[in-house]
Each structure stands twice: as C-alpha cells, then as structure tokens.
Length: 230
Picture (spheres, rainbow, N blue to C red):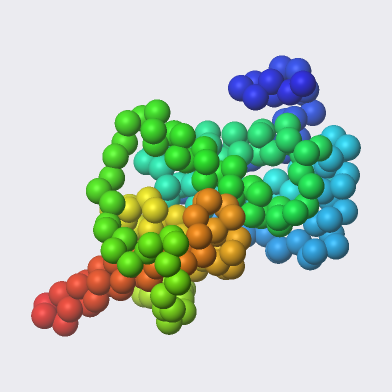
C-alpha cells in the first residue's frame, strides 16, 4: 500500500506524477492549462491507472493539477498549504484509483477530494469565516430560478489592479459561496456535478451561486465607481 504521507518511500515511481510546484506570484493567470482530455482518452487513462500504470496516472495529473491547484489556492490561505493539498489530492486519488467506478466524471471525483481536503484543513486550522445568510436556499423547497449570468474572469479582468480586486473579493467570500462559484464559473461544472461534489441539493447550488456572483459584482462595481471619481 502506498503511504499517504510519503508515497515515494514505498513506491519510488510515484515521483513520476507528483504535482510540480508552480509560480503563483501573479495569480491563477500564470498557471499553465494543458489541453483538456477527450472522453475516450480519459477513459483509457483511467483504465490503465486503475492497474497502477504510473505513466497513465502521470498524464491524468498533468491534465488536472493546474485546475485543482487553481481551485485549492483560492479555498485555503497560503501558497504552501495549497501546494500540499493539491499533492495530497493526487496521492489519495492514486490510492483509490482501483475503486473509482466511473459513476461520476473524473474531474468531479478529483474536485470532491480537493474540496473535502480544503474543508478538513480549514477545520484543523480553526479558521472561521462569516457565512452570508442563505435566506432563500431551503434545500427541501422548490429551487428558485436564477439567471445564469456567468462570471467570466477574462471579461472582468482589465488590469492588474482590477485582478487584485477580484482576488480580494474571492478571498473574503464565504467558502460555501466561493466553492460553487469556482466550480461552476471557473471549472464549468454543471449544477448537478457541484451538488454531488459538495453534497448539497441543486437548488442550494443555484442560490449560493447567485449570491456569490452578486458579491463579486458588488466588489467590481465599487472599484469601477471609484475609478470614475478619480
């Protein structure tokens, strides 16, 4: 069995797919995003990785590590924590690969691991955040319909200063809201995928996404209003 805290000790080949440390000093825009795997290629790699093929798992890491890291670094405080958690995501995925049954997508599965590790790290560090009231997110009620006004980072980032405003807004956002925003608008995950990943009803995903977008929109509008009065 691979040691979850030090896989290289029992399996030297694990070094072949350890996530590489990246320069995050300029934010997520510096992360190299490899081409997405098509469905058949991904299925083939998963099948090989389930048989402990390190080359195949290495390609999975190459395909997803930047996306996982981009999500994690906005969910936890500190670059080192983000890098540690990202590496742990793929360690755990490798350990459990033979149990991955394909009932959910590979990305959904990896992001579920990442999300759970972020929550665990936050609890252990006793970091608390003031949660925005979800006054219309009753999980048992009929979900309210919200306009799908997608947050598009490329459309709103006009310069380094505004990029900083967006990052600050994300940093100050409730983890519950930030999670669905990053997964839906950042990773283009469907409502149902997010609901399965986070363990909440689809209606709650929609209401949290609505609030998260409003939070971000307010921050950007405040910045732009300040610009017009200079």
